[in-house]
Image (cartoon, rainbow, N blue to C red; front, side, top):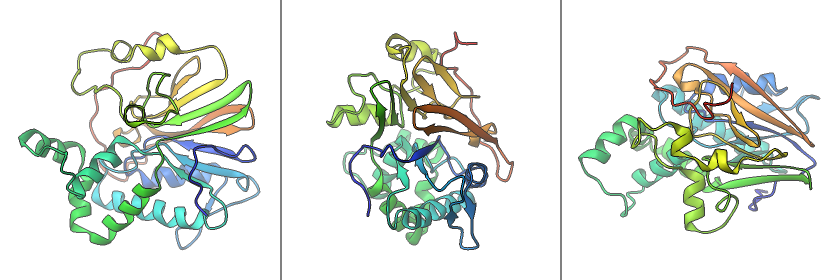
Length: 283
């Protein structure tokens, strides 16, 4: 039974994984490191270490990787979404801006303007579109996974410790709120590509201004970084796996927060990225 509200049960611990972008080998390695095993059918199995652990993917599991690895990623996530959630939900999906945009392309969203620029962007940034259009079975799997994605989840352990999860960072007035504008802001923040010379700390000033010295954390991905970037209770765990760095996760267990990562395994060509550092004032 798939749970449709946004509250994560506190009787489970959580492995929260940043932007995968087709890095299936790194995803498997990270999950093995967290105590899961993978059987001959590519299904995750729990051990004594992982039996009370659930998995949250923070969005952007598609695009930028090779067709082969993107295919493996979609098939692995789909199979394990069905497998792990057969009795109780243990795998959660958060909607990323890449899932959202690819969905709009492949269903011919009438609000999506098709011109020279969007055709160029589709080729540069959304290479899953062409793959899904030529592979109907894979397209069907993706569309089903898209339907299972939520905009946000929240783990509320007690009055002193909570974790809110979104794909993109957003101002607090939108965080975990309903409505079209709030959902839009949690999926995608102000564009770096449209403001290439502006430091992220100036592009998204609310992250520094709203950060607090408490344990009510906001964890997000979206902003590819060379390492986990944290300022007070604001944490970015997109550590640029597809750009040749690492795939990272946050681990939430009761009122404790820790992190782990695995390096890029060089089993596909890495994408190119010019970093714009978040929380550049933090050593």
